[in-house]
Every structure is written in structure tokens, then in C-alpha cells.
Image (cartoon, rainbow, N blue to C red; front, top):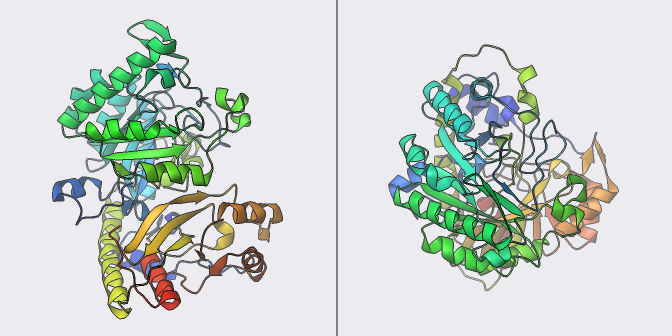
Length: 492
């Protein structure tokens, strides 16, 4: 049984029909958050994150998020940010195809909810700052909550205006807030933030970073006191804050942050950011993973972030935003809950099936431990399964298997997918091979003989034998065959 792709559900209206769609999906082409689970968290916390794709690694296999670009104004300048409007070609924070009024946002959210049953979360992440543009943010949330009462509301902010709005956020039942915190030392902050705008004045240099730091810490403490779950985003900037991020992790952990998301600097000169134009590089995979490992003893680490656009729509790792621009949606829409209700039934059954499959796989395998570690890259379209064609993958999910268990470790992002119009691109394949260095096994839904041979020639083991199996089941079976042992699957 494979996961339902978004486009397969747009005309499905019953749980039975959806389960039938699940059984029939898959690619036939041959040419080409937190990882804590229900057993690890208090029941009330698990209930709040289990359907939130950013706060739960397990949930991101099943549920989608949506961002609406209603907040264009910003109160700080970051050297890694260049907000672009009317831009469909870049995938990074701060970029949108169109700015929306709250009324336009409502129409768009209802349209997406009717057509994307996976939708569980509405977020406002700019393209400026959601709390600096509070009037528009608040109005949007009020209207959407009235139309779709069960949708989760999320805010992303730089934190400067956060203390002024914590009480309103709590009153509106916004219980997930993301704060971008890149430093706890203003001497480092002044290398990242040229200026802030606070209480009617523009501040620069060390003073600006000191104010921002104090407001971020105050806002974080206030949110935690009100029981709001906080995710802290930190951009890893080599040579500036890479060695400092463990200190950031320690400080936000001490103040009660639920998650810490350490993400790589996006530094393409074509984006026009200060860092991009001055040659500041982003981190390598190894550098990012090393810093994440160093912070592993603090707040739970989010490793599945995709650094979404401010108008992203769909599962993490995909973006259907261009399918829902204003010119493509009706002027008048009415919310229909049937698809989302039916989809939740599908997910409940799929989650139960997945847990049983994990247990059965572990029971069927031997229990002799082997002192071995396996790093596995998986191509997946969702559902926690090995179900994506190699040629279509734009990223691989990384898992580590040891005698102690199987754990999600992060992502290996690709420059582009290998297949273009049914043909493989040799230069892209070279970059994919480079991105997968250090991986012991690559699991895909399907792969053509030519790319498979080239990957194996580069020393990578590749298998499509486990197509549509659960990821943990596939890894456990391969591990047992290779080492004669069955690692215990950790909760997702």
C-alpha cells in the first residue's frame, strides 16, 4: 500500500475510495521535527503535535501545511534575506508569488482545504514578519478559524515584536510559534543583522542586536509560560555562528523551547542577499550534521525542515502553491469538510497499520545484536514508505540503523531531480552522487539500470527491492540480511 499523492485525492470523497487510491499509487516509469512519538511525550502534547508536519517528524509523512503571504512588512534586516514578490522560481523563505489581503487569504485557504485533504496547519511566515504586520495576521486567523475551526494556527516571527502579542496569540488558541534565533551574543548578531526598527526608531550595530536578543528571550519565556509550543529556527552561517549555535541551543533549551531547527544558510548570489553577494558560503552536509550532533543533548532537534516559501502549500518537500494563485481559484468558495474528515480516517488506519508492520518486522527478524551501523538514504513521497522513483527525487531522507534502533537523521537535498521529460541528466547525477557520499544504502521505489549502474560504480549500494514497504521495515530487513541482526525500530 503506497501513500496517496495529493493530486490523487482531489476528486475522492470517501475513506474507502481513498484507501483504494492508496493501493493503486506508484511510479511505473523505468527510464529514470521532532522524532518523538506518542510513547515519548505527555498525551496532551502528543495530541497537539501529532498532525503538525513541522513539529512531528512522523506527522510530516501524512500532513500538509499552508502559508499565506499576508504580512509583507518587516522590522529587521537580515543579511541572508531578500524578500521577493511575484517570484515563482525560488524556493526559500521570504519569497512569494503574490501578496494577499486577509479576505483573499481566506478564499485561498478554503480552496486548498477543499482540494488538499492532507492540510492540517495554516501558518503565517511573512514574507515580512507576521507579528510586525499583526493587524493583517490577526484578521486572517480570525476569519480562517471561523470557517475551518479544526485547522491549526501557526506563526513564524523574528521575535522583535513577539512580547507585545503573546496574550493575543494565546487568546486566539495559536499554540505553535516559531522564532528565528541565530545568536545569544550581540557581538555575533551584529554580523547577521544590519538594523532593526523598534518603537519608532531604527537601531544598528551592537545595540540593535542587543535589543533583538532581549526581546527574543523575553518572548520565548512568555510563550512557554502560557503553554504555547515553541520551535526555534537557527540559520547556520559558517564562520559566523556555527561554533555559537550550541550556546543558542543551551539557552533556548533552558527557557523551554520544544524544538530547535538548525538549518543551512541559503547563499546563492542569484537571490540577491547580502551574504550571497559577498560570497558567504552555506554549510556542507557534514558541517550541518556535525552542529546538529553537537546540539543533540538539548532541545529536541527538527531535522526534516524544508525552509519553505512564505506561500508554500502541500506536504513538506513539495510545493503546490503555483496551483492555487488567485487567478486559479473561484471568487466564491464554501468549505466542505468531507475530504479532510475522510483523509483523517485513512491516516488513522495507516498509522495503526504502520505500527503493526513495525512490530511484525521486528518479531520476524532475529535478535542477535551486531556492532554495526548503517546509514540509509530513502526516496519517499510520504506515508513513511519507500515509494519514490529515483529520477523524481529532489531529496533523500537519512536514517541511521544500529543495534539500538532506527532513527531519522535528516535530509540530503539535491540540486534538482535526475529525470527531465523522461531523460536522465548526467550532470545532475554527478551532483546526486556527491550529495549521497557517506551513505551505505540508497532505497528507492524504482530506478533505471543506467543510473543504478553509475551509482554503484561510485560505491553506492542501491535497491528498489523494498518498493512501497515502510521505511523502518525495509531498513530492518536489509540490516538483518547484512549483519544477521534486527535493530529495534525507534518511534517516529
